[in-house]
Length: 425
Length: 157
Image 1 (cartoon, rainbow over the protein chains, first blue to last red):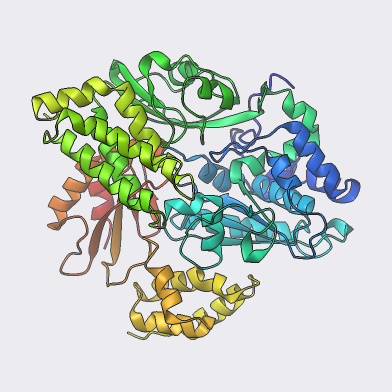
Image 2 (image 1 turned 90 degrees about the horizontal axis):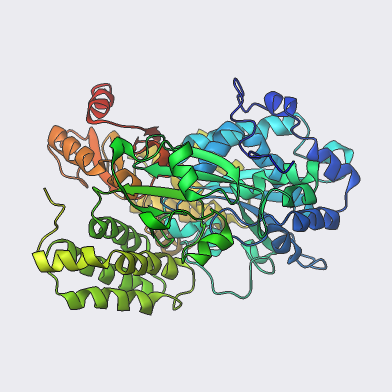
């Protein structure tokens, strides 16, 4: 078990696997749901998931079993389970593949999670752009209904469950769980103050669990093999496998699932084929663009939650963006600053005002209209956003600025001194 | 242009509303249906949707103006959305935008006078492993080169 490298992409990589319900069942799919519904109590399911140690794969890394355990047992209200398929963190493209190529694994995990918290109606909140993926999920839901894994009295257990697909409509912040809930309810995706946490008061005022697609897809394996078996994979506090999505200047961009703890260096050079055109590596963002960038000399780091924290970054979503020596770091940060200024939901002043200010300052530096003090001003603005907003978007926009300025300060200074971008051909 | 759902769409809408414990949750699905059928969302369409959902028009207005995928004015038959965020950017999305601008004779954010094409720059489309990426209406086109972009546009009638 401990040498298992693939869990959620185990089926997808097999030749001829289509993701149909028949293919999924041939690979042992929908056996976990039978075990859960016919042999286990909801609390036992939650305990198994707690034992597995599986942490959220969407970015925040919160332990899934502990989250499920927060739902009050005595609440008379309905409960909701929301599958977060918003996949909006730039650099992240894994959930789309799971939903497209193995939708039933995702559904089975979702049904089990819903059973564990006593939920009869759950939703998949999928980003609006994933129109075809939404259709694939709807077809898979129909297949699961026809096979008796969704609907009333599933497998004679007395448990009723329905899953609906809900498309978003273009908003980064809707990937934040309370923004997602507001959006599901038909409103602007404005994140909520916490507490109350969604597990107490979430969608429609009821106890709600929000989990990421990849996290949910691990559930059938955990049930079939036991939480302890899952916990034996990967590293301490980073159990199981992770999909690493590698994009940018590598020879073989794509999705790579490995045990947590594989090094970033091995991922880039042994699996993703190394840097394109034999160029020199300059920088790597390890977990989606909000996570602090690493310099080329910092990539000998294990890709798990704690190891990346030790080098000042985070695992995030596992979306790795590789940049070679041709990339201007000021220009790259400008690109990200435009993104954050555009995506701020406008609710909190530090983010709504600060993100465009950071964009303007980076723009001045990139185009040679800045002084050296502007570099410190930029850093200062970032520090004044971080920790002062309702949701983590404040950190998401501030961290890249702080990391780029700290780790590549000489490039910012060079722009100021030259009065232009040295990379501008 | 009518501002009401046609009969089949209304039936679709009535099925969707049943999925939620609160009608307001059908706001975004209703807006998607309206845009699918009519191309964009007029003020009259907002009033109609607000009526269906028993909501003040201002509530639906607040929602529709928040989301970038909803269009408030007529767009081209083909809406070309060029992903411009980092992975696509460092692999040439800027060249793609400039090429399409030159080919269509419009700037990003504009629609051709014959209403055939609109060109917009969008934030991350979530397909970074196959960058650079564009989306035309509901379809993704990935691993692009300028030649491939031309081929795709040549085939849009």
